Length: 520
Image (cartoon, rainbow, N blue to C red; front, side, top):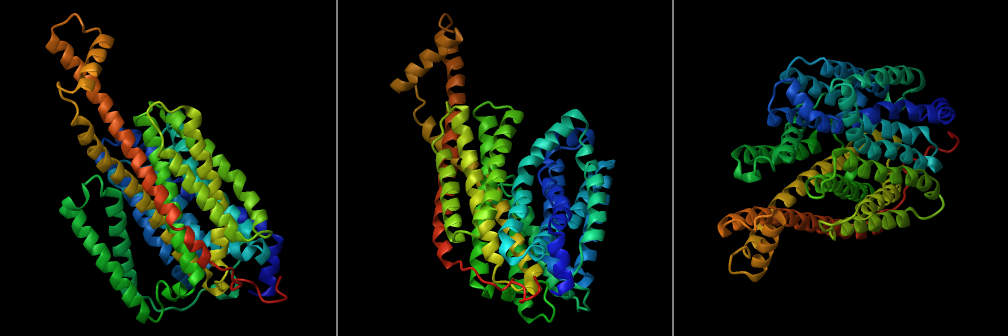
């Protein structure tokens, strides 16, 4: 990094941070903002619910494809130009999404939106690493982490409010002024270091095709697998096979490519590999828990969507409070301690979830979300900082692309895992509980009599009273089965997160990204 660029970065580091995090935040919000508006979109565009979910899948697929290509496109086009181009594509496609005239057009424009937005996370992370001095990398990652972790929380809240008070089109239109401001700020305040200028490169068509096919099919499998009953569906089976073969072939091809899409040699750095693995499981836990909790609150405990959203949103405030503190502490104590403590607290939050019952109160529900926010805030900043600490500046774009790819895949697998486990374990517990629902079981007889009395059917014929009581008992049985399934799933997540704790010992802080003497 030359002296002029370093001085600009040092002088305007907070302006640079705002410039790159504004579009990144709205891009992250757009990964979840559509979820709560889906019913309105479906009704407005005369589509079925299964068809409408493709508006979510299309965005996730194109987003997943672009993230690992970010470093390669940045080298080929120049990073600043590619960043501005991405924001332009994202902003224009947001307008087109809001102007869609049918479901097909909305899905197409969502693909464009994902293409524009996919690059923003890796590029913003790389630029923040360069804009802040080496000693302030923790602060830089705290800024990045606020957007990464708060976006999925504020997205559903914002989407619900906009849809209820305006219309679903405005969840896209609201991106336009923010996008325009971001474009102007990036044009004025962002500059490319010499190693990120436009380069002449040979296009790796084979690697590009294999990666695109592999990630696209993987994301569709993860998003639609539970809905299609996984491998009992030929559709899911063949997509999984295509994904596995494509990604394996991609790895082989990249080892021999002259200008590879991804420099897989980055995995030779043990700290980077270990940190990326931890990020995968941290986001597996985070997104799995974020999906798990609102489903539990609304389907089993009778919470409204707004009240469930408050549990998530207010818990997210704990993350926002924790991250700036961690950004300061990271230079004063060993970051490993922060990662270890954060992992334990996050694991403890899921252990608390595994102990819920159907009569759990609001405070008991709220506390695990607060602990998850604190734990994630504690571990995420030092994890990112240490993971990238041994990476040279010239390799930062490639490294952040890989890191964010694994983080996103971890989140997608976490969501797919949670929804599958809840469904399967609900069936298991339902079968176990209904084994005792026989007229000869004493507890069943007592429950049936109590239900009939509560319903006021005691004066009716016995078979009518029993039939009415059976409906109540069976309904309660389903709720109990679902509750037990939530407990099982939470405990499994707790076990997985606890098992990655030894990986902290393998992480070592390097100075590969530090600037040469005299440049700062």
